[in-house]
Length: 345
Ligand code: UGA
Image (cartoon, rainbow, N blue to C red; front, top):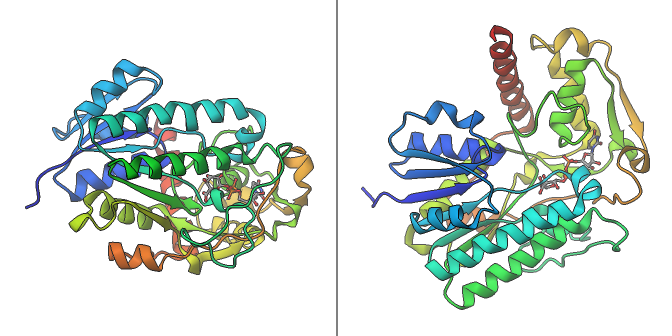
């Protein structure tokens, strides 16, 4: 058996983190050091001898130094990834996603730790390519008054910084999530409108509120279920023969390319199969709203987003398998289980 690694995950209580921790502990003999502001979604691992949790802010230098020093591989997942926040609180996005994470990246370079950096599909921005390629696509962003791009700009700069450190010996892989979806992505009960589109839709159905299609919902995304995604992340962390070192991988499912309108229709149709959702779903309508009204004038959107994944599939011997309907079913099932638990108290 391969030598057991110690994997440090910042933001482990978040959407990607919770699923990744679960899968590592289930399928690998690796040790996991987890950090976050809380451990609600990780509580079930508390007694696992290969798991340790350290509560704290990633801006606590003493804490992150201690944790990075103890690890082999670092996955810095702590960050803000909700478009409404890019517009409403851009400096917080910059401070957390870029500034705080830069300290972690530099520590990895200094202490010679492998870093798995989460970039984003957003770096391709409004690229007109039909398929976004990590090595050939231009990265196209809007003007400064469209504050939405602060997230993509910060991620793009960090991609460049990580790659530059790579020239000086940093062992890294950059991955770009393409609309990963699943249970636990955002808070279902949050009514602030900050959640990403699927949680927003499911939360609205639960509350009997209409689903709002921004500018008619014709924009398209390639939705990728988190179980497919963690499969790719495990392979990247494993890094057999060093194959993933120094690479950029899109992680997405091009076969799940759907418009937001199609997503809304599919989610609403499926709602009739699930307790807690089915009754309210009957009065929910799908309506259109302007992006200015929904997000404000600093919003700008990309029409379509499809990942090139041939290199990801070949290097990692990985393939996304979960179609949209199955992804929605798994997500509903996760939330129904959560609602059951909440009901029991
Ligand atoms: C996302 C987020 O920036 C990040 O989570 C991530 O890095 C990246 O893209 C990704 O996951 O690939 P976006 O795809 O715009 O951005 O995320 P959503 O908020 O889920 O919106 C998707 C689409 O649904 C947008 O066109 C948006 O305008 C639309 N939308 C959203 C609606 O039509 N109605 C809503 O109620 C919410």
